[in-house]
Image (cartoon, rainbow, N blue to C red; front, side, top):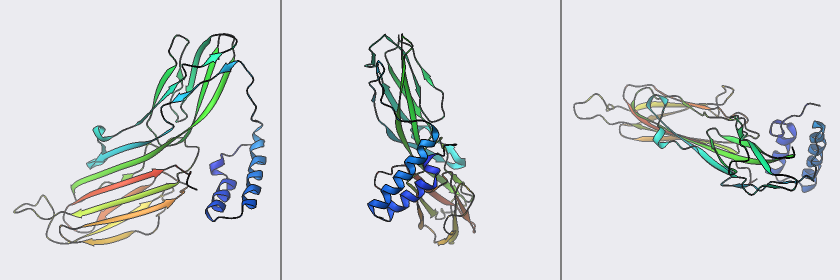
Length: 281
């Protein structure tokens, strides 16, 4: 039987809806039993490890936020962009039947496997450059050809700040850096402030003296308009902020289009904030 990822299954969706609407504990337990039956279709069972390898793993963190800053032309500003670096310390791992000869770490984010040998100190770092929930697989090997693997869940949230300066044609703001996530986000928050620049004395570089009509249109990853397009008229020197929040969106690669219907230039400050933390449910 083909195994369906839990976060895309109907069982997962129904269970989350039941938790959100505070259905009875009995109903939730029934759904968990149903999911247990489905999970058995993969042919794998959780077994207690009885081999000689004792994996001791110390991680510097199991979550973080990928921070992206962009400017005019969708150019990434490297000095204000931060990945999430996580350290895996396996230096205290031992085997009762031989020497530890190496480790492998699959970070779970689609990047290359990390390999090592027994001469290394067992401390490794990986830089997460994509967002999502990932299952890192850590494997230890000994000199008697024994192997043991463990899995660790790692959550990388996402924050993009996108600023356009003095433009009449604001960039389309995209959510990017998506990894092979095992779960959907809990929230996507969008905030976009547009400022109608006042005219400079004797200058045509900045805005004019007239109002500017601005329209925000938000699209999901299936190219559907989310909510309704919002149109506002902004007076000279004033600002208006557009905000939208979506709970547990199925698609992640959203985009926001900002269009102007009048002459004159604006500044824009747009933030996409994506959280994968479901612990508050």
